[in-house]
Length: 149
Image 1 (cartoon, helix red, strand yellow):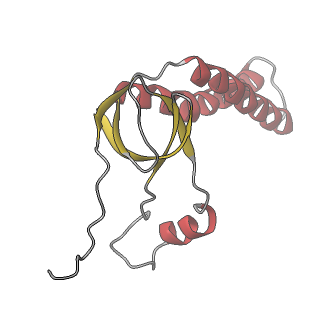
Image 2 (cartoon, one colour):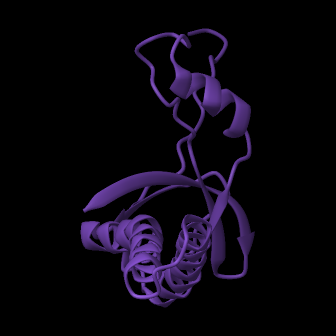
């Protein structure tokens, strides 16, 4: 199970919009590696995740959700491997069955990759996420100094 603690940033009826705290790509090198450079360039947009709760939550409240690992593996296979495999299969078919020239093999490989992309896109939409609420954290009261303490 993959667990993540998210913060409620907006409410729309029983649907809460959750936002994860952004983590640096790598915190060990103090910004000298390529991952952090790309993270700074492309990772600035914050994404929200809508989720329908049975119990009431408030803005600012923390929620811990979990996701089954098998769903991540299915998504990764569909998104990464399917276009690659179809690209190779289309190129091999063009080369072996049709005795096509190199340019037609490249075109067939591109067509296979695009076909794999669209199949993966529909497959990912059809996969159901089994997201479970692990814990709804209470809203913490901010600590302030009281005169006389």
